[in-house]
Image 1 (cartoon, helix red, strand yellow):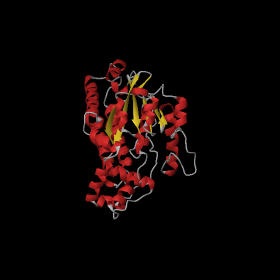
Image 2 (cartoon, one colour):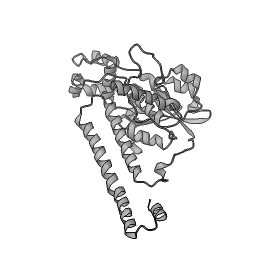
Image 3 (spheres, helix red, strand yellow):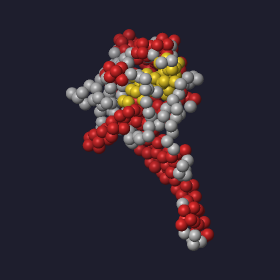
Image 4 (tube, one colour):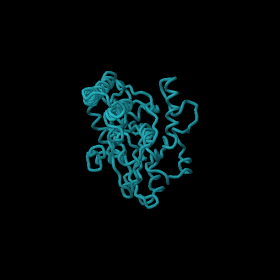
Length: 341
């Protein structure tokens, strides 16, 4: 700006030019950080003020706060800096796979990644039409205040829920990241020896607190645990809440390198981690509209949360299953993405 002023209006005094410089420096140094602080603090207040019963909502709000902070910080960087450049990252020598465990926020994660990065191929959305898909969702949300992938009586499959057969027809040759909620045998069958066209695969598993995850599954099933049952009968009812835990099997570790990430940090730390490995989309539809898949939990009716003794028994029981056993050993280890990033 100062250079243009000097060139176009040589008559402008030195004092005026100095004032302009001081004003610009002040704006970048004081105004932008204050604006960022005020807005993000206001959003945090909203998170703390309201008792969200669906934790996904809180996690997505945190993601939006982080995005907002980054955008405001970019305003203080000069044009032509890296903040304004389109990153054309070359492909890695790895294809990433997301094992979508039910009730771990995978629908939102798949959708957000597809909207943000290129070559995301998922049961809950592909990069190539993610922009239009989210624009449609925004229109529905503006009218109704919510958006569901599948309305009662509606089509079972659509652009936000792609039929597995359609995924097979498309193939995975143009994918840098594959998200699927399917039996674990899919990964071994489709990507023999942990490779695809001689390209190494790396699988990522979301890990959520076992008790919290169990209760979320019960809510999805429309079931309430009865804490007054005998231990054996109670544990049988626990298994009745499970939703396809066979999506992960310990035997996958024989063929694939597998890493885990914290459920609570998937929309912040994990997306940042993948952002260093995936190519940004040129156009993104913002804000991302969450696809509702579950009823809200009423935690006041969850008797297990009032029984620490039964929680210990339940946790010990859950660790007998491959998914929970893996997460227990991976969380906090060198293979925990969100711990070391």
